[in-house]
Image: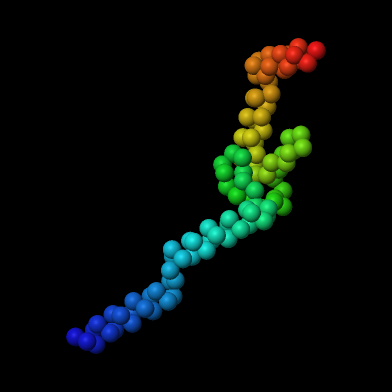
Length: 103
C-alpha cells in the first residue's frame, strides 16, 4: 500500500516537474507583456486590440500618427472605416460649421 502511494506521489511530482505550473507561466507572460508595452516595444492594434511589435511592416500614417496592425485584414478594415468617416455628410457639415466659426 505504501509503495503504491509513494509511486503515485513520485509520478505526480514528475508530471508537475515536466509540465510546469501553467498559472505561473501565464503570470510571467502577462507581466512580460506589460513590461514590453511600458517600454514602448509593443503597441495596440486599433482594430482588434492585439499587441503588435513597433517594428511591424503593416502600418498606416494618419497625419502625425502612425497606426500599426497585426494583419493586412485589420489594416484594410481600419482604412475602410477611416475612408467612410471622411466621406460622410456629417463630417462635411461639421467642417463647414468650423470654418464659419473661425471666420
